Image (tube, rainbow, N blue to C red; front, side, top):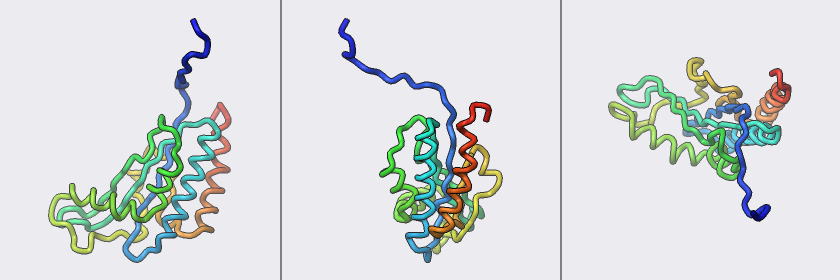
Length: 170
């Protein structure tokens, strides 16, 4: 009986775009190398959200010879579901901070690996995501994006491509 007593949001169906971030880093990489890659992914998420799209974000880790029984390891961590609001601080921590990868992702991987974990924790380096694991990812920023210039170049390329998402026919 009282107008404006309660306000409830009704989710509307809309397209969900998935951004994949290869958060893989190796022992000698500088923290800012992941920072640039993560910042580009955060910026894209912000642009797509502002355009009215749902954004899902996946953190991806790629390693080789991580244990005596695992030759190739690909780990996927859902950092943001498509129906969640964009919390830039939480997202930046997960995709920009090398500590998240080294203190959260890698120990979680090793807890579930069969065999004996390699003393050097396997080979990480600039390993790219295998083609089979790219399915369902609309935009992927790879581990070879390690500088500000490379991150800006990647972001400009995908934002130009994402401009087609505003077209209802796309």
